[in-house]
Length: 79
Image 1 (cartoon, rainbow, N blue to C red):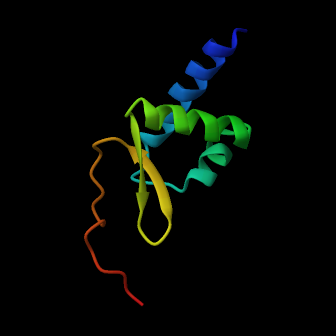
Image 2 (cartoon, rainbow, N blue to C red):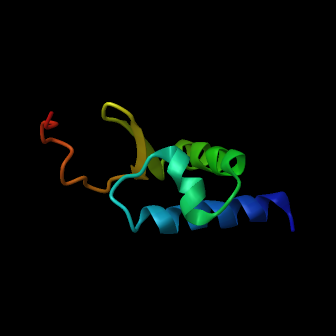
Image 3 (cartoon, rainbow, N blue to C red):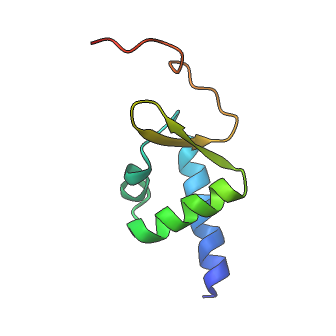
């Protein structure tokens, strides 16, 4: 397979997974889709550069689909 095709397939797999969750830690994406962590990290960076996903920093970092609402993003954290 050509590397570009593999990257596009991986990116689509990530987008499909992210459409099923509200937000997820970036390091958990590779576990969920059962792919190599380094490749997933590169694909996430590419998707962010393409403005398809965004990173969130809410006490820790998360990734989500660009424009997807997060129901609990504005709520204070209970201690």
